[in-house]
Length: 462
Ligand code: NAP
Image (cartoon, rainbow, N blue to C red; front, side, top):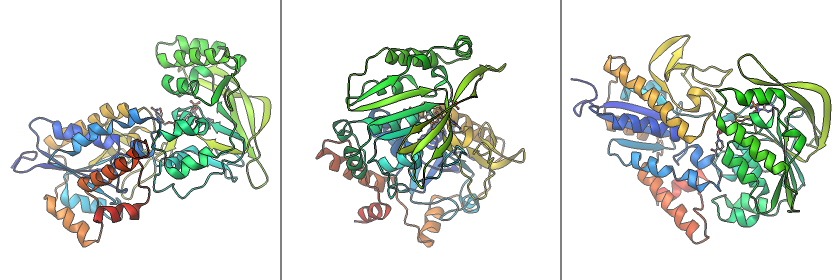
């Protein structure tokens, strides 16, 4: 019998239910002349990964992409198993009994560190934790952030830095329309924050943020966005960089936007956002908690590969701050029984085929941030996941896949039940989703999220 037919469907497990997992499912379910059954597992009861727990609460248009994922999940050969942890509730060896292949779509679950003195002082936080906290991610909801003092430094100028800065500087009215969780809304509404300095180690032309995000900072109701003209004048390295054919158009546009901010006169709004360029952190200072941050001024040099490098000068300055958010990127973490490249925080792979010491591991594929590192926007995952799923299909056609002893839909549910794993189906999630949206309607918000896993399980069981 041929694999991938109605009589013998190709059975694929996907670990992780964020965008990259759903795009892999989409490719496989829509491949012509191939019958595929997908089981998607997530350690959280809720699907959608960073769309729920990472995308900023005031970016509801971006979150609307979940409609596409709902459509994928509605296909009869797709099942969701939430609240199932890979490595404990179900292992790779278990999966080999039930599936022909596995796709890891687990993202990048921790933050990169700066490696400087004072990084662990009280009041120095990974931006990713703050994001998880204000989005009600069950792993981060217990954290606390002292927002009572006036001065904040954000290190890094990527889109996460933009999100964090915007949320810190938004007015209560701006936040009230979002699905930010209640405890974060109350903490931010009563916060004493007045001044947020955002530091990029390279220049305005090399900022990682995209145009809409820097525009939003200039449109906030209660905050002026301040840029110093001398920090957005293009130096020789930046001029040469912008002239390269490989440089993205958004970089020149970012410079234009920042230069327009530099020519503004602050209108006296209650909060200030200060965008600083060519400053690298040297040390976070304080007696037990953050009191200041020491920064060094950089000059820019264009190397022969077209990369602009920040070179420290001997000019340092110490800025008084009460809170530091380190927003220098996410980092992937290993999974049990899966090869891991610790320097880059990814599963080593070629076109999504996982490698172990240079050799392809039969049956294992990676998509999204655990495949390519934490880069790109949600849409970047579509071609990325399609590439890995195509590798999977090509391999299956060549007979390269796992040989499960129980390739049927009931065997896996029986195993989870026998282990007492209380899994959440897609219909269960839809029940939670409906309640969240209904709770939001009465408060004029898109939804009021469940943040506690036990509560979610209780509600589903009712
Ligand atoms: P990112 O875009 O990679 O930005 C990281 C920032 O940290 C860069 O400015 C980087 O500077 C800086 N940095 C790294 N190491 C540093 C160090 N040692 N000292 C000082 N600065 C350092 O990462 P991200 O902001 O975490 O975002 C991750 C991905 O999610 C991105 O692709 C982003 O576009 C995406 N995202 C998108 C949205 C959206 O679409 N609205 C929202 C959030 C996130 P260099 O450039 O000099 O390395």
